[in-house]
Length: 175
Image (cartoon, rainbow, N blue to C red; front, side, top):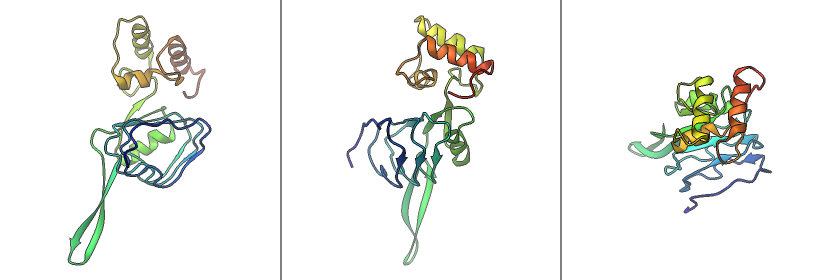
């Protein structure tokens, strides 16, 4: 299918099994209201380099994304599915979220909201880096832009910096 770019509605709650399998998606953000992503929902989306999962408690099915599957001959009259994690695929998500657990269990790379320094820790260095970006003194990569945008408004701003500070001091449990 030639589906490359789409925006899922905020009202969406469930993504069915294999709903977008084998599509040519190039970018994807899962809204925070999505509570269930079915098995293999985005399997074989080889043009999709990353997915942003905004919810912290989204149930994610087996090989929902970041994976590929091929039907391969394993002998005379015998075929099996070969499954593997796509190289250079990342899940952008919140710390201690179900998406982070999914990534860890499948071997998919993660990039955490708030962690723009890439050290898998959310600390004052991230606040400083976000503030430098806001002031135009620190350019961000595309993934850093998404990591810094913890309120999912579309761009890093002072509200994101404040949210990261609140998270560090324990006033926020998640983004």
